[in-house]
Length: 319
Length: 276
Image 1 (cartoon, each protein chain N blue to C red):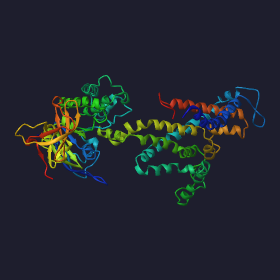
Image 2: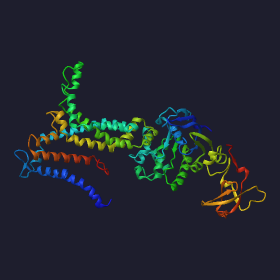
Image 3: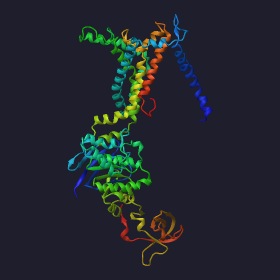
Image 4: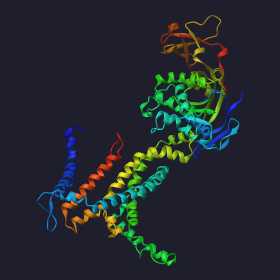
């Protein structure tokens, strides 16, 4: 697949610390690609170097076959949806959406604005000011303002974090749907692993300024390359360097005969609605969590149980 | 705080406002409807004549000149103050240093600073002396005792009142808005024109009121730097209470000036916005 956006050994050195350390990425045209990592991992700085708000100390940024790392933001065909949305408070919805069009002196501004507002379901709110909109509507204005310029890549800096949790899941689905319909490449920054897993075609997990692993959500979840990736995406039980996902752990009063199992006793039950986490302590001392269906759950703290798993589900990370 | 406690703490300020602001205003108001006494002061009967006299074209010209000079000075304060305030707002850790430099002149009396300008500008002043000794000019440049000198003095004196509210507005400006403008294709000058300046408008309005109103009523600057040629409303009022000894007319003129200033402030106010 041809890469629309490519980062080649990009680093950013700030006076006090190295925010980004030799990051290389190739993002395919039309992909929904996420930069995932804890706060301070360099994902936002990476995004800002693509947008042009920061200049890489080393390395190159290529967009549609053109090197862009020396260009100012207003000469790059990428647009950003800011974490705070950064809508212009003195302009209406229409004014915000037209902002970039006027500069490009597009003839049929009117038609373009109408089309993009329709795409993000904001028709009829053209003359509202940002303060008169809900959080979700503001986010859609921010999207519309960028999308109307038909960027090669749309950069999104934690665009869902300002929304309340109820709305977030809904908007997440809308965002994915929108990206599929218009086919624009998304580069999406988030610290929320669930968000990244559910939205992305590809994910780069970042840690301390460097890319830890790149792959599809399935790759990262099922075949994490490092202990960090394994822990950061989804829950993980650790027995030394051996990792087992809670959903791979089986638990019963007695294991089927012939199955190698370990003895444990139940220490706690966490009811999570769709499933139950049974927490147990192995005889060897480690804590382990097993995920069971609510109907299968007959455990109480103190119960003696047996725990086992398929060797195929084991993840090993030599120290 | 409960209402009685609040009242206790407010009382000194209220008393001060009543005795030093409300009562004198009422006295000025009453005086403006009375007749002049022989040696200053006022006597009965009550009359409207002090106000009708203000319609004399002679005073109209003075009022217009005052507006003109105050307007020019305010405009120059905006033009000089905006870049300065923007620079200070964007200078990070040096902000406080620059702000204190803006306020530094207040540590000396305004009168003394105005005299300092006279020493600089007059025919035998520092500037003309230096220029002449360098043989750059023959005769001294007439820099003092004209409208230009008055405007210079006003801009110098009131620039901080423009810079401070502008700084306060520009400092609060969300930097991501400027990034967003660049991101959407605006070059720096376009961002300034389409984002920074519109969002600084409340600061410009506040600063304009804070400079225009005192410029309109100035008498010290026009008296010292404008000489006898520049009579402004402030000087007119001052003269009535000193050399002309026509207190009622001076009171009427000062009230009209105040009314005009208040009307202007309301006109400058946008719908739904607070004054200043």
